[in-house]
Image 1 (cartoon, each protein chain N blue to C red):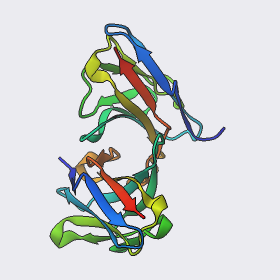
Image 2: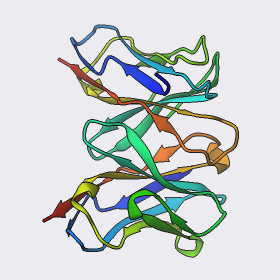
Image 3: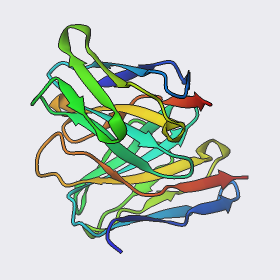
Image 4: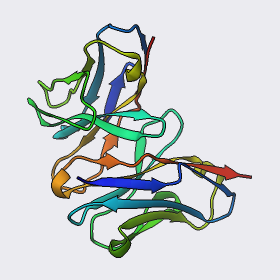
Length: 114
Length: 114
């Protein structure tokens, strides 16, 4: 069965610092991978997705993620954090034996300090 | 309005009562999903549907019932609500045209069972 593991339920960075949110996946076949963001009292919205076209994926708001098959990882980064980036971030996987089902990680809450 | 709409946004109910959460999408997406979001667990899949009259269990289906008589609607019913079903519920949809497409989420329903 497919699964994702997000390392760290909370991450705190200073404004202007690098953001690194970690995600490792488990899948028997090359998966489709996603990062979603959730702002308070809202639903989830897509940040970026990997669908095998390119290993480095750029998303909205300056975020990007790199697919590393050898490490089964899909970490999310942003060079310089902004206060507005404070939110909860979810890594997700679909495809392969799971078909259209999207399975989510437990989430990482990002805090940005002024 | 176009999109995916959940109702109600907030609901308080008593233990043992039946509760139905509504989900409506205007895109004619094939796939629809119900997730519950709980602290430390991320989003867990309750039920999903590939098309009208086709539904299947997800990770945590016990205590829930779904139906999908029309493509655009996917109601979730708690037959006899329990306190452990206190959660935030999200409905989502996917076009179904190809694997790797992202899910679109509703705003969520915050359900409290007292």
